Length: 130
Image (tube, rainbow, N blue to C red; front, side, top):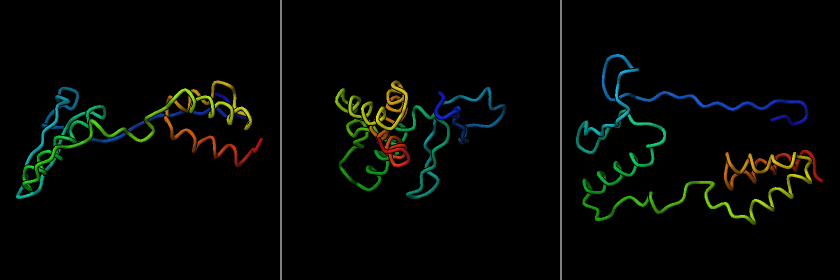
Protein backbone atom coordinates (compact mmCIF):
# COMPACT_ATOMS: atom_id res chain seq x y z
CA UNK A 1 0.00 0.00 0.00
CA UNK A 2 1.41 3.36 -0.96
CA UNK A 3 0.46 6.65 0.71
CA UNK A 4 2.46 9.82 0.11
CA UNK A 5 5.24 7.75 -1.45
CA UNK A 6 5.75 5.62 1.67
CA UNK A 7 5.15 1.90 1.56
CA UNK A 8 3.63 0.46 4.72
CA UNK A 9 4.69 -2.95 5.94
CA UNK A 10 3.20 -4.90 8.81
CA UNK A 11 4.55 -7.88 10.71
CA UNK A 12 3.92 -9.73 13.95
CA UNK A 13 6.44 -11.53 16.10
CA UNK A 14 6.37 -12.84 19.61
CA UNK A 15 7.59 -15.40 22.08
CA UNK A 16 5.53 -18.00 23.86
CA UNK A 17 6.29 -20.69 26.37
CA UNK A 18 6.00 -24.10 24.72
CA UNK A 19 4.52 -26.96 26.72
CA UNK A 20 7.48 -29.35 26.78
CA UNK A 21 11.20 -29.66 26.19
CA UNK A 22 13.30 -30.45 23.17
CA UNK A 23 13.26 -29.42 19.54
CA UNK A 24 10.79 -26.52 19.30
CA UNK A 25 9.74 -27.51 15.77
CA UNK A 26 8.64 -30.93 17.03
CA UNK A 27 6.77 -29.71 20.12
CA UNK A 28 3.00 -29.74 20.12
CA UNK A 29 1.14 -26.45 19.94
CA UNK A 30 -1.29 -27.71 22.59
CA UNK A 31 -1.46 -25.82 25.86
CA UNK A 32 -1.25 -26.85 29.49
CA UNK A 33 -2.63 -25.14 32.56
CA UNK A 34 -0.65 -26.21 35.61
CA UNK A 35 -1.35 -25.34 39.24
CA UNK A 36 2.05 -24.25 40.57
CA UNK A 37 0.78 -23.74 44.10
CA UNK A 38 -2.35 -22.70 45.93
CA UNK A 39 -4.02 -20.12 43.72
CA UNK A 40 -1.14 -19.91 41.23
CA UNK A 41 -1.73 -21.13 37.69
CA UNK A 42 0.83 -21.30 34.90
CA UNK A 43 -0.12 -21.51 31.24
CA UNK A 44 2.31 -22.94 28.71
CA UNK A 45 1.91 -23.61 25.02
CA UNK A 46 -1.00 -22.81 22.80
CA UNK A 47 -1.25 -20.60 19.76
CA UNK A 48 -2.16 -16.96 19.28
CA UNK A 49 -5.42 -18.05 17.67
CA UNK A 50 -6.36 -20.07 20.77
CA UNK A 51 -5.42 -17.46 23.40
CA UNK A 52 -9.03 -16.44 24.03
CA UNK A 53 -10.16 -20.04 24.58
CA UNK A 54 -7.19 -20.66 26.90
CA UNK A 55 -8.05 -17.53 28.89
CA UNK A 56 -11.63 -18.79 29.27
CA UNK A 57 -10.31 -22.08 30.67
CA UNK A 58 -8.14 -20.21 33.18
CA UNK A 59 -11.04 -17.98 34.27
CA UNK A 60 -13.29 -21.03 34.72
CA UNK A 61 -10.63 -22.77 36.86
CA UNK A 62 -10.10 -19.65 38.98
CA UNK A 63 -13.86 -19.31 39.51
CA UNK A 64 -14.11 -22.96 40.62
CA UNK A 65 -11.13 -22.46 42.95
CA UNK A 66 -12.76 -19.39 44.51
CA UNK A 67 -16.16 -21.07 44.77
CA UNK A 68 -17.70 -18.61 42.31
CA UNK A 69 -20.61 -20.13 40.41
CA UNK A 70 -19.90 -18.42 37.11
CA UNK A 71 -18.21 -19.25 33.82
CA UNK A 72 -16.12 -17.05 31.56
CA UNK A 73 -18.14 -14.72 29.32
CA UNK A 74 -15.50 -14.54 26.61
CA UNK A 75 -17.67 -16.27 24.00
CA UNK A 76 -20.37 -13.63 24.50
CA UNK A 77 -18.20 -10.51 24.78
CA UNK A 78 -17.10 -9.06 21.44
CA UNK A 79 -13.43 -8.41 20.84
CA UNK A 80 -12.22 -4.81 20.61
CA UNK A 81 -12.96 -3.57 17.11
CA UNK A 82 -15.80 -6.03 16.47
CA UNK A 83 -19.23 -4.96 15.26
CA UNK A 84 -18.45 -3.37 11.90
CA UNK A 85 -21.65 -2.45 10.04
CA UNK A 86 -22.17 -1.37 6.44
CA UNK A 87 -22.96 2.13 7.71
CA UNK A 88 -19.68 2.25 9.63
CA UNK A 89 -17.74 1.23 6.52
CA UNK A 90 -19.49 3.93 4.46
CA UNK A 91 -18.79 6.67 7.02
CA UNK A 92 -15.14 5.63 7.30
CA UNK A 93 -14.72 5.55 3.50
CA UNK A 94 -16.24 9.03 3.21
CA UNK A 95 -14.03 10.46 5.94
CA UNK A 96 -10.97 8.76 4.47
CA UNK A 97 -11.64 10.13 1.00
CA UNK A 98 -12.03 13.66 2.41
CA UNK A 99 -8.64 13.18 4.10
CA UNK A 100 -7.02 12.19 0.83
CA UNK A 101 -6.80 8.45 1.46
CA UNK A 102 -7.14 6.09 -1.52
CA UNK A 103 -10.68 4.73 -1.94
CA UNK A 104 -9.89 1.16 -0.84
CA UNK A 105 -7.71 2.22 2.11
CA UNK A 106 -10.64 2.45 4.54
CA UNK A 107 -11.62 -1.14 3.69
CA UNK A 108 -8.07 -2.28 4.40
CA UNK A 109 -8.08 -0.46 7.74
CA UNK A 110 -11.42 -2.03 8.69
CA UNK A 111 -10.11 -5.49 7.77
CA UNK A 112 -7.14 -4.98 10.08
CA UNK A 113 -8.56 -2.88 12.95
CA UNK A 114 -12.35 -3.24 12.81
CA UNK A 115 -14.12 -0.30 14.45
CA UNK A 116 -10.77 0.88 15.79
CA UNK A 117 -9.94 1.95 12.21
CA UNK A 118 -11.62 5.23 13.10
CA UNK A 119 -8.62 6.11 15.28
CA UNK A 120 -6.26 5.68 12.32
CA UNK A 121 -8.39 7.83 10.03
CA UNK A 122 -8.61 10.45 12.80
CA UNK A 123 -4.81 10.68 12.81
CA UNK A 124 -4.82 11.29 9.06
CA UNK A 125 -7.74 13.75 9.41
CA UNK A 126 -5.82 15.85 11.95
CA UNK A 127 -2.86 16.01 9.61
CA UNK A 128 -4.92 16.73 6.51
CA UNK A 129 -8.44 17.98 7.34
CA UNK A 130 -10.60 17.92 4.22
